[in-house]
Length: 272
Image 1 (tube, rainbow, N blue to C red):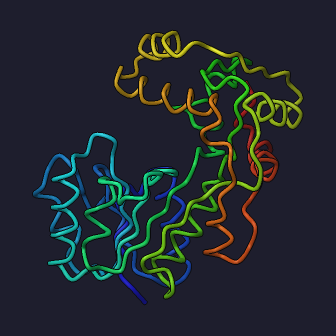
Image 2: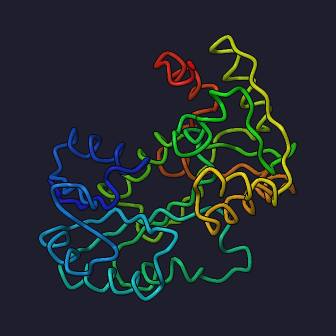
């Protein structure tokens, strides 16, 4: 039995990792700004208490987290006796062959580390803070055009994270995670629509117009610009490839987008 700290325990991945670890008999410290064990990136006084006594850490850096803060957290984790750390990163970072600066603190730490690099989540289509409102309205407008994305199921990310946190054989591994095939946003919406008996459409939107719409909806302009750039990259084909990390880590095929739809549709999440 291992004591494991899950940072961002209320997020898309963390909320799935915690019950998996608990069911395996591990002691889990669920930490976030609102959890019983408080952890706030903006308040360093919360860091040591969260790290105390833990042997492994699941680490989800926020988009605004600076490199010095990442390095300090890893240093404090090592000082606290942490021996294993799993970081959620993003796919395609090291195209130039170097170590991405956003991963360097963990990879240079001397700890047993594993890097998870997923592509876009299938669950983005059922996330209230992402595509769900547009899906409920019947039309999703993005800069992705007819580009294809091999959406990865967050359940697979959680399974890989748990394996990396609890099993041997994953130290020093970089797992790029995707689904088994790439589809367009229009195809994704058609699959959802067929499952719930609704016509759903995708409309291409210029990146500048997308940013303006997101800002008008209350999102920060920096966040909107970052998402628009990623979506435009999909249009350009930059993410149209399959990764084998799920198979490498778990010895099984990844869940498909169809699997996700079959699971999500009966919950009523897409019923207006």
